[in-house]
Length: 478
Image (cartoon, rainbow, N blue to C red; front, side, top):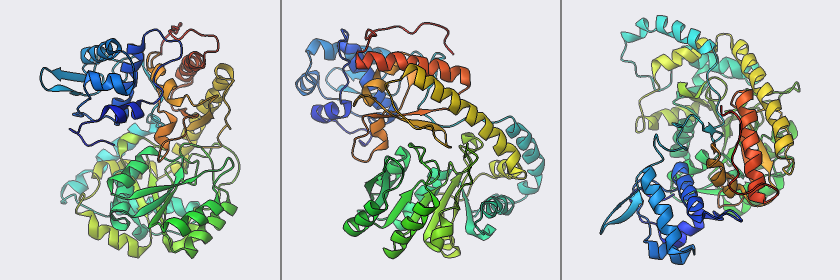
């Protein structure tokens, strides 16, 4: 990722843009503007980044000067780019209220975030939390561990899943991403290698880079985790840490079997490599099969587990947690003050209320997600029959294999059809996954049907299989 205020060369911008032009498209400037817009939205072109001159862009892409000028004019009109005579052009920010990729346009369907809205039970939990607040208002409000009530209820969830856990093993954080940043700060120094799955969660990869670590990818197999691949990577890379998502892996949706957990734990224990396990999606099993024991049941104190209420309850709570050995908890707490002084009390009380009878809330979330998954799978088979995928047994997204390396092109063109998507390469360490696309199912069934209907038009136009490149989407817009 570029530093804010830095300059990007024409060659590097061309590499980031990839295959931005639609086959047969007559309006190349519109395609180029859409591709730059996507880079800004994804954060790959931060605000303040200075753009190459029009002449440099003409040489790097290569396209006509007229096309470059028209694309920049469009981006300036939208407020994405700002220019000043003698100073050049720079990124001013994402599309605002007049555009269509930031969420202000009510015709936009956002499939970039695999995160559901809150359930109705959240409002009742907030009312309970409000009644409990007065007893906390007389205190200083700082608690680097988190409220004991919440830590105990989180620990109880692990016990219910077959993993003995005490409240002293839990540290409450401001989301799983915050938890991961705390763990990286403790374990990883500049240049240290971190084993990660390929593909993996983009924000987790960015956190490794932000800690000056080096993510080392181990490719996923069609049926799960390559234990031999991890053994080879451990020998060759000498990593400081391994990061895994064994429950409904994001983005593939795969669930690590008990046998794979045991084998992988054995390999990591032998190499004395600590394992960080992201269980953000662990509560979202949508099948009837029994879930394997948590990874920490196989690897003991060498596992640090990250959890979150974002997917199971609501992302707006910003509550996550770390489960670790008492020794690691002590070390985490000794370094936390350099980052923050604790998690907000009110939100902790809300989640504690929701976890008082956890299965009631989780059952409703799973039923909702199951319906949305089934709608998404049926719509994909209808509108994108050329794609292949396996209906996931849990989680919040379908990982689709496309009919060619066109993921970025689909994401660019989709903006013109009111869809926001994350292209496959965002889930890869050094690029790749251009033939893959994640389709989350966190919208209502009606919106999902509309979204995937549009996606089918986009996919057909990109592949050139019967729709003109500038096809319009007809029908009601959700």
